[in-house]
Amino acid sequence: MGRQERIARSVVRALIRANVNGTKKRSSNPFGIILAIFSAFFSVYQLLMRKIRPADFAKLRREHWDVSDDDYVDSFRPLEGAKDEEALNAIGDMGFSGSTFYATTDQKYLVKSVPRHSEHSFFRDDLLTPYVQHMATHPQSLLVRICDFLGASGASIGRIFHLAPSHHIVMENIMYGREEAEKRGDAKWENWDLKPTSYFYPERDIADGALTSEATKDQLADEFHDKIVLSQEQADDLFARLEEDTKLLAEHNAVDYSLFLVRMKLPREEVQEEVQPEATKSDSNLAPPEDGPSVPPQPPTWKTGVASADGKYVYRASILDFFWAKHKIQPRFMTLLINLWNLLISKDGPMSITTTPEEYRERFLKMCRGYVEIKKD
Image (cartoon, rainbow, N blue to C red; front, side, top):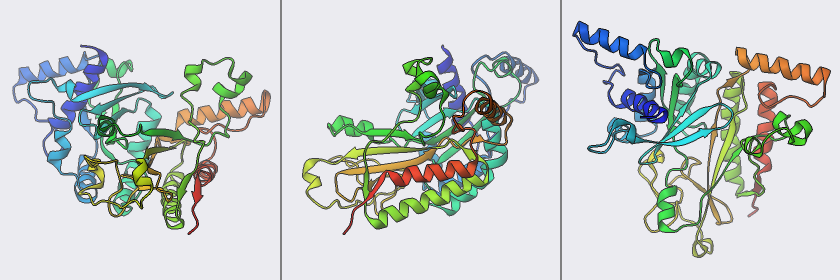
């Protein structure tokens, strides 16, 4: 069994083999306890994971996102006769953070590793309580819905030498429904991971990028060369959500977050008609209709899909990757390096990870507003 499979197994077991309080049942046999401790310590990739603040996330799922415990756990339960690790499909290592990603077989949820100490400690110690409160009081928030937070329990070889990620988040999959659409032969879904591109990116800007591979530069932020056509009401609602969410992030020193934008093209015959929203049971479990493209429920939300004012597209949007905090040690060290670079070598300005939270929020909101075109009545 390879590294990815062992990591997947540890995640699945933490999610489906916990009791209602989020703690695993332990053996009462002393020999069994000693054997389990010995095995856990010498684990390289398959770490013993535990849920962090399980009651808070369970309350969000049940009371605010309309996701039952049974439905949630079923997404991580392997098919009959399958192994635990087969409940998750690895979808690769992405970005500069070294994170690994998995998707549940039903595509409802993603599991993302959070390997950097500065990031998972920030979420656990600084942002978790404000995040839970914000998501409970702002049902239309664009912040990605994090459904569980897992952390390694106890010492192990893999954890000591950073051979396996010690923390993971479980979050909604904003691309849920794409596979169904592809099976129906619908137009391909498009997506962009958007950040302000006016910052200094060493990979792109030093020597015009000649010192960096194209594969590395491809991991930088995307650019959206189009406009999201919205009504005035839709635009006002979007900007209000962005203002509220980024205010929370700035207050807790977060920078470098991104707007993940998904676009689904409506069939030509539907473009000629006014798009009528369909009701759905739950925002978090939206399944595109069998006989047509994904259309927003009533009322439409950016989590499930908002039809553009020109009737050509349905958009989804979510704010991701808000774990980089300026007051943590690694971000402070990076800020020092970039300040020295600007002082001694070239005045290129700050990076997105070294600027101030207020300045990043300002540029981020300006970027989002620039992508919107308001259709006049």
